[in-house]
Picture 1 (cartoon, helix red, strand yellow):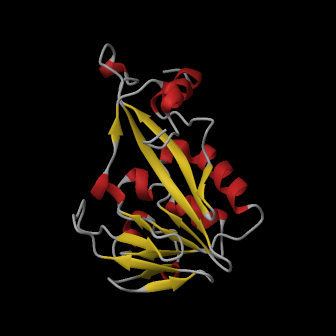
Picture 2 (cartoon, rainbow, N blue to C red; picture 1 turned 90 degrees about the vertical axis):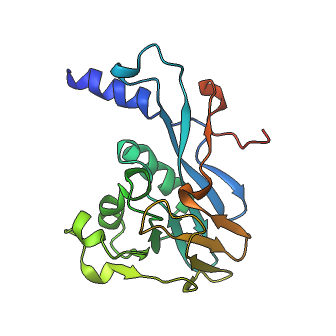
Amino acid sequence: PEPSSEVSMYQTAYPVPDRLPREVVPGLFWLGGCSNSGAWPTRRGVATTHEHLSCYLVVGSEKTLLVDTGHYAQWEQVARQLDACLDGRALDYVFPTHQEIPHAGNLGRLLDRHPEAVAVGDTREYHLYFPEVAPERLVRKHDGDSVPLGDAEFVFLDPVWYDLSGSMWGYDTARGALFSADGLGYVHDHSPEVCGLLPHE
């Protein structure tokens, strides 16, 4: 396809709602967008199902941590969202919960854009996906390990359900937030105006 039609297809297939980013509770921001299953040429005429492609920024009093990287196709929007939420703060940690594109696809871009940040989690295979990243910036964590954020600890957990062999969950002690990656995925049928709303909304 022509470049303009390709861009249009990606924007339709991976929409980013105006509601995002949003601060869910103080210090916890919801970023990202959706995947529109009805937007691809081979899916024309199929009922549209949107699925969250979310990442989350935890802003502690001293350090910040991004849970997942956002989808590769939404990089420009996610980068802008992240800048807005950081509001001049540095990004210290990036925690890809597992190796799939919506969760880790932007890791190389994020570490390039934030040269002081390090990737944390089950990082055993990420040097294969991102050979341009220096090995010391891929810090492996195990069940029960944590990183300090100042007013909180971010604790790394073995998942109850493994989506992939490298899956990890995380827990923010200050906000009581559990990040379960695809362990508790949420697919929802909706019209575009519902993107970026919480279930009770």
